[in-house]
Structures are given as C-alpha cells and as structure tokens.
Length: 388
Image (cartoon, rainbow, N blue to C red; front, top):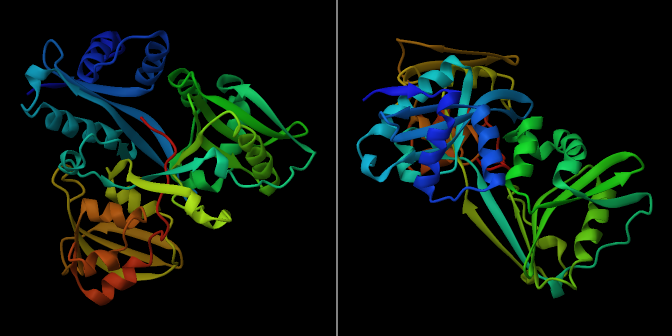
C-alpha cells in the first residue's frame, strides 16, 4: 500500500474525505478552522484517488517546564469502501517516521476507540471532569475586590489577555499545549458561540472564563486565574447568571475535587471520563529530558516493547547522577523492568505508578527496583485543556 504525505494543493480533497467520514456539513466557520488546522499540520493519505488519511498537527507541550514537540493526530478518516484494509496502520507507520524526523517526541489524540489506538502504542493519559450544579445551589461568593473589574469580550478580542494568563498558569504545564497565536485564532473560528469574561486589575488581565449560554445551561469551558481575587471576581460574575439559567456545567482537564468548597457537597455532581490518549514517539529523547522528581538514580536497565516504532523497542539503560540524565540503548545486561510503551506512558504521565502496575501484574521485573524507579516520575496526572 502506497502512503503519501499530502500537499497544500490536496487540502480540498482531504477535507472532502473528512466531511464525508464524519458526516459534517460545510459552514464558513468550519471551513476556516479546518484551513487553519491543515496549514499547521502534516497530512498523510493513501489511495488514488484519496481514500484514507489523517492529520498530525504541529504542537509544543509543556511538561513541568520541559518542552516537547507533539503531533496532535486528528481527522483519521476513510471512505466506507476503504475501511478495514489496513490503510490506517500503514499511514500511522509513515506518520511516526516523519514525526521522529521532525523532532516530535510525543503524539496525542482523541480516540473513537481506545482498543483501536492501543494497537499503535497510544494509552490513556488525560481525563476530563464535568461538574453539574443546579442554579439554585450556586454557592455564596464573597464580595469581589472593587479594584478588579470583569469585562465581557468576544473570544477574538480576548485572545491577548487569555494568552497572558494561560501562559503563566501552572495547570497548563502538566502536559498541556503551549498555545500559539494561530491556535487561539483557530479556537475562535471553531467555537464561535463561546464568550469570554476577563478579570482586569487596571490595565492588567488577571483571570478569564470561557463560557457558553446554551439554552437553560450555562457552560463553563475554561477558567484560569492568577490569584484568589481574580477567582472571586470571576465566580461572582458567573454566579450572577443563576437567575437566567437552570444549571451550570463546568468541564475541565483538572481532576481536583471541588466538593469541599460547598456547604453541602452533595449538590455538586461530578463525573470523570477518559479523554485523550498519548504515545511516546521518541523514547530516548523523552526520557533524556524528562522532568524527573529525584536527582539520583543508579543505572537501571529496562526492556521496552513497541510494536509500531522499532527504534523505541529493546533494552535501555537509564541513570541520573546529581541531576544529569543519561539514557542509552544497551545490548548487554539483564533488564530489571519489562514493560510496554503503553505502561511507560501511564507511569510518565502520572496515570498509574510503576509500583501499582507491578502489583496489578501489568509489568514484570524486580520489585525493589520497580519501587525505586516508580518515584522518579510525576505523581500528579497530566492535564489537557484542548481538543483536536
């Protein structure tokens, strides 16, 4: 099967495929958002004429202060007559090779089926939490500081303020996107119904809320703030809508419980759902620059299985000496840990520790070494506030 990297001239052909596969009608906003996405992506396809394809959008993510190139996979599509012929697997292999050449160390995607994408090395890395609250149960918010003014703005007009606040928020450094201006503008095109409230301290933005008025529901899509005064001001603004809506719904990538903030915790209904998956495209680069939580680790040999990227598979030796990391392929020595690409994603993204995975029989090796290595990774699960 021949796989080709598509050109800008083939955008319309790919867009027609994507619209058919996902049964999406054309609209000016959808057309503009897709054109922007295609311009910032690598596109691959197979068939002549084109019958299958996908996009890999070029992003950068922040991993506790370490930046990695990341390919955001989307629009994985085939015409019905081309389904099940192995075309997506062939395209994935070609895409992974190009990602490595382009120094895209990671890849994220939103799965229609987790088992399908586990075949290609992806694993669940991000959850999405939704909080439901009846308007009548909205809690009392302290009186806001008069020095903080909340201004309603269109999404596009609020982008400079949102860039500033999002860019300095720690929640965005847990595997989240470093949002470039083009991506902010793409969000504005993709979600024209969304509005923004910006908390201003004089001429300086200190917080924002992205929301949507949808029938009887006030939907809060994003909430970032610098400090408590900004949060109170935004909370007061949001609560002022309780007379016009029956319920509030807040969807976020932050898994932190909010129940303790309510006089009666039972009024807040919270649900957690699996969100997006991740895979490590270049294990050597990822582990060599990872933000380890300890400064010293005796050399450990681990054996990694990766069916789709052979450059990742095999035995690796990892060591940390006074904060200096070495990660190199080895051919000698017995591995102390044996694990798959997916189990490494879980550990490195804070989903499930190596210690817990060993207890559940998901990985194999020496219990003592696994316990020691388990502590080098982030203990808090990564968070993602974007969709592609």
